[in-house]
Amino acid sequence: MSETVFINDFISAGMFDYFVGKKSNTFESHIVECLADIYGEEKLKKVYEAKDEAGFANLLHTYGLSHSKYDTFLRDTIRFGKFKMEHQKEPSIKSDIASKIEVSIIIMFIYKCLLIEPTLEEISHFENNLLNNFEMIKFHFSTSLNPNRTRDIWDKKKRMLTDNVELIEIKPEYLDEFTYAKFGTSLQDVKKMDYRMVTELNSYIKEKMESITIDQQVNKKPKSRKEMFMKTAVSTGSGFADAILIAAIIATEMSIGLIYLFLHL
Image (cartoon, rainbow, N blue to C red):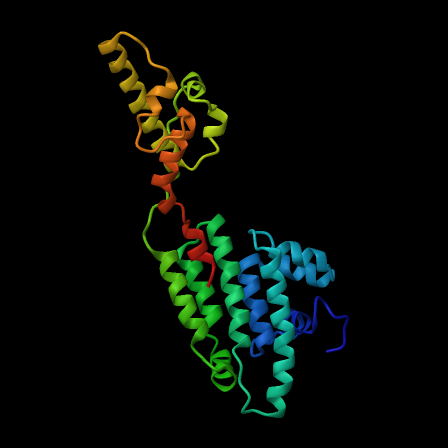
């Protein structure tokens, strides 16, 4: 192949083999096929024919892929080229660099699925391209330290994608602006909180408001806000600070998100 290098030698070879040479038996072409499955064959072909490297980068960032993950993907494709030459000289040398590139492809697919819910057909199509190319299966068995590494990782991610779980947006109910102001905060600030903290904060405020009403009815002498909150087991002397503290204590153990488990391999 004699043409201007596009992105790097790996991407150039893959693009040429897939779009021009119509080869499906090279690892580089295999990766481009998977990219086409995620980002669209026509879009990928367009940036390649225009030799638009910025367009290629923007395409891969379409669904929120981070710059660090994009850089890791390109770095691993360069490392693959070095490994490929070493393996040709000494066939006994093996590496999992090919699997690392495929895992980057899996991450790209998952990013897309987080924004656009995939159908079972789309998941199956991607899985077939990623895992069921017979030439690539043979390639892994001859070059990889763990030929099943990509398949094992995909199976874990696929279960998360295909679990029949309905995700719904939880919108907390907010108290009125005047009530929050009485406790030293604002509705605008409360809306920045996690919904679980809002729930606990509202519950705490309502409980204290009820206790104030009852206390006023019994004693007929309003006590200062500081006096009321100083009776709590954990108190800072500030009603709002107490409320936030209680909410934070309850919500802390709940604050670890599933996205980290979903994306980080």
